[in-house]
Length: 300
Image (cartoon, rainbow, N blue to C red; front, side, top):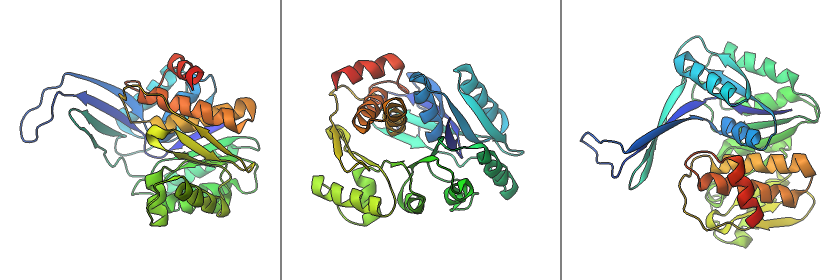
């Protein structure tokens, strides 16, 4: 089983405007909403690829109920902890002449409620996969991911970490199966400009020395590169289509890689499917649909 963790899920409310002007009433030209959160995005793309997963995390209030129902409606199993106070956050995504986002803080998570989450991870068994994705809410201790990984102990679990900076680095001693920084994130981690293939490789290999088994570095319009634990380096390009959406593209790549590796055990195919999923989301209004993913996969 694949488990995805989203500590602070959301409803993403997307509004479209011809132009956003501060200080006045702006009228939308359209709007839609999506269930959001990096781990949830991974579960959604896995579902498009006919792979089951269980979404873990916290929900609260009427928005939390909507998140749980929304996942159930599209066939995704969830096992969230219902918080006693607050509401799950609503994030506003403004798509106008420029893209802007307003991300809210979310509900308060107590120590006892986080302990309930740790207890749920006890069901994770040898051969399972857990995806730790996104930032940690302010009300949860900064070592939240480490506490989860320590709880897993010596189980043979595939660990996927999609996080940044110190949050990512602190997970490396637990030998994550996959991490996915981009060049900007590598620059932040190593306090240097990462601008070319040589820089990228040096940083990726350093992360592998620190514990990462496989490192995908997304290169934006230049595709992606995988530094794999088999000692090989794999590259994929990208297609040139109009980018409609940047939200969830990286999460989609993670889901595609997990699915491709689960299906074949082939790192090259896993990277190719991951790239197809990331591209498909970028070329879609929301998260990618199955048909778009496989259409792009054939062209890569």
